Image 1 (cartoon, protein in one colour):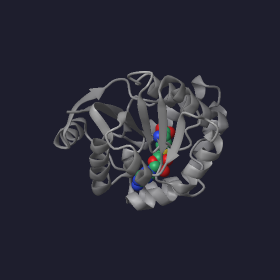
Image 2 (image 1 turned 90 degrees about the vertical axis):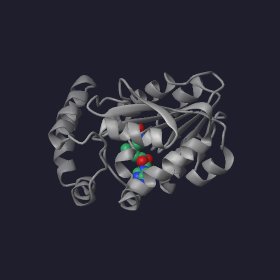
Image 3 (image 1 turned 120 degrees about the vertical axis):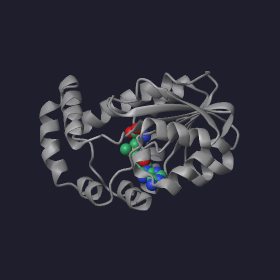
Image 4 (image 1 turned 180 degrees about the vertical axis):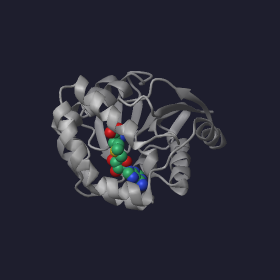
Length: 231
Ligand SMILES: C[S@@+](CC[C@H](N)C(=O)[O-])C[C@H]1O[C@@H](n2cnc3c(N)ncnc32)[C@H](O)[C@@H]1O
């Protein structure tokens, strides 16, 4: 499952209805990550960063921003865009593990858990533990709860489109989405979902002091965020 989703993200995909949708999404996520930065000199990792269009905003709030994505094409695109930024580095998960063990103050994993199966989630939590300093914090956000449904997704997209001036494009995007490779893959292999108690127990078993974090990062408040401090 995890590999199929990674291949999807490594290819050319269209999951935002237009550039404005992509922009407001990344602006909001960046503002939410920046608000979590504990100190101006903090080392912050955005794991599964995607295109990270507003990474500069997070970089301004911390000492070093490390953008990590397993999708090579995404990394190449992001590196080409932020190449001139002294405080931003774009790395693969392997480079992250090699260069940042025990150095990370905040690691954010936003809107990624749904693409990870059990072994991939286990590996992520082990890696996070090795990367964080004692007292460092892992924030796992935009986690899809078990009761999530497509109708809710549609409602959320239209509400965001309405608030941010792209409601017509959102309607058009919904029609396109219905026939899209994303939807086909979602129907075939599904998305991972997690209950609040289950994920809290999972984080505790991995050696974190974990609690629910409110609000969720981004626009969708049906989804959940968790804060996990390395004990
Ligand atoms: C929905 S995007 C999230 C991007 C960004 N964090 C955000 O909040 O918009 C999902 C990201 O997870 C990464 N991803 C998907 N499947 C993965 C997997 N199996 N292992 C590691 N990363 C994966 C993709 O490369 C993609 O950048």
